[in-house]
Image 1 (cartoon, rainbow, N blue to C red):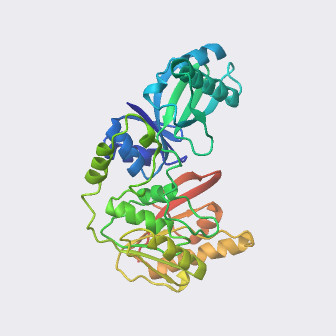
Image 2: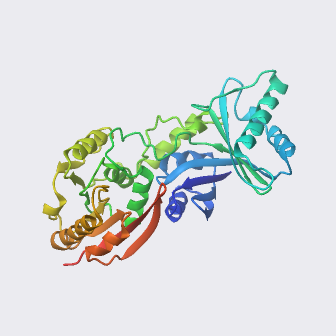
Image 3: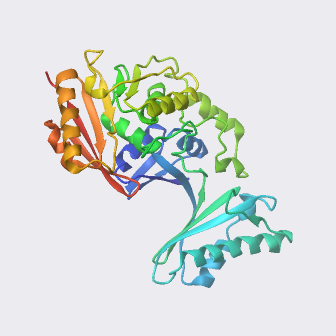
Length: 371
């Protein structure tokens, strides 16, 4: 089957590599998405183990449409009764970029009517619409005259792992954090330190990545579990086969923050992850020095609207000074929306990436710190 994994802008290449690792084939990168092929096994694994994905869509129809009536008929011809039944609920969402179909909400309404009418004609009853917590979500996408009908297999967006119950200001999203760890190319045999840990997102994602565990609880209710062809046996096999290799691996994960609220939030969130023994303490990064000869560090410096530009530049200069004096031999990744201030650190990055965190442009630079 064809599958589409959506992601954040700038993480398409990382997501493509993840898809290849779980067995996806015929991989093609799109804008903020990756198209690939796989089986039901791959679909289940994609939802459980693609750390940088937002949701996984399964296209069930790709065809040309001429007008609104043609759209209605094409949607109605799909054998919806083989996918779900009249006791379940559904929702339809539309996206259009077409001179023929100008209104996304009307496209969604027309498609919803077609699905309901098919059930009514065959069973004299129809499934109810539920936009809050539906059993089935249908995505209608029209570009010019090309219609794609997809099933949303994920439900709640995949960046919502469930462990982050307490957040500090401006937290980084879970899937962006996972993507940055991939770009950092962290060697899981070496320590990873987050000195401005916020709510602990980098540390949690590093734990899942290093242990090769799903960042989602096994009991999470993905929408594909509502489909008629869902196999619990196959789902359990995916869980078993993907979590065998590195379960017992020892990881050295450390975190700190100058803010007591951040330390408390991180400790609370990490306690929700079974088996995560991660050391987090209160400390000013500018007073810190390395505890290991070499390791990896990842930093998401705090953003404060009260800081003037001069203060931001001085703050980043202190980051550069601390790294040069206290962490020679380390590899450091820094994500920030302030490129000008980052240039003032006095360090030359070995690699830099431009990404999007929601609507915000961010830069991720990787530095090798030399003595």
